[in-house]
Image 1 (spheres, rainbow, N blue to C red):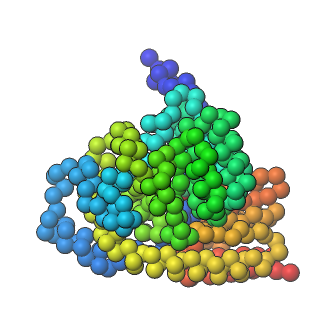
Image 2 (tube, rainbow, N blue to C red):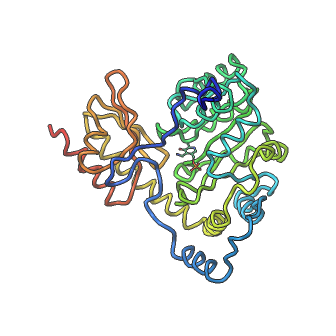
Length: 351
Ligand code: PMP
């Protein structure tokens, strides 16, 4: 017997998804926070380990305390919230619940790769509409979804990797006109300062995804959450594995939520640093940098930007070359790290 003979035929040649292969040095390739745990939270964790540690028990499968804190923050009910091992797990679970073999999901291109990966792993397929941010781009998504009879539209707002997000009018257009489940992924929402969460009260087919991995600096704890109409949350929960979130991850996310103000202030600081780096890079005539509402910048050039950064000891997300154009996404880091990026790119091709 050969194991290869037993693999699903459609996945035989699928490569594993590797988020990024950093070259070492300054790590600006996965849009993490450059800052560690605030001391207050670190102390809480230490006390918990000293006084209350009970890792011999399974965690609360319903994430009751964490969902309560998230619901309070967003002014919704706990029934409107569900948590996942990163929003990655929620993307997968949503695909599991809606995709029948061959069904399409619609995304913009380029966008976050896991929508297509999860669709395919769940026997679906991904169709795309061109990336754009206005009502005409929204119309293109709705039309593509209608043509493909798509079960799910994934809209990344702001969009990874391009940095900008669909306008509020565009989001509303999609919600008003789509006949699919509409997932608005707001992984970078804290850096844009806008959100569609309040609309879940109006649209029963809408899911908003948020994560603790970016602005809340907890990428290592792997916690994401979805907000939606209660009936839709029940559907998502049907495919969610039991005990998915480890005790420590639930606690860290709960404490982070209780200190949300501090993380929101950090996100604002990051947004300021992002705008300053944008202004500097925008003046360089050998590259094009996109306006961003996120904690990263998307750069295109006929020259190999990633190689310039890599030679200077900075890992960025390299999307390779398309036509004549190299494309790279660089995360906003600490002031020192941003200065390094700025110095490398400003010094690379002096006039
Ligand atoms: N959505 C987007 C747009 C992302 O960029 C990422 C991470 N890169 C995720 C979701 C997944 O985040 P996590 O699983 O860490 O919550």
